[in-house]
Length: 68
Image: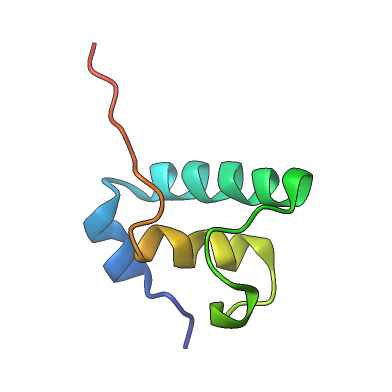
């Protein structure tokens, strides 16, 4: 089973496309700066993409919708 669950994440983000966009952007940011919002021991995932999804689930990443 994957952690965090995509069903829980889709309650936070409107679409799968937005979920992928936000997680990949945060993952790249982690790789470039080595800045993590939680202690390394608190992450379940070993890779930055999984860690970005965990941060999203824990409410550490805020998704702001643009209005036209």
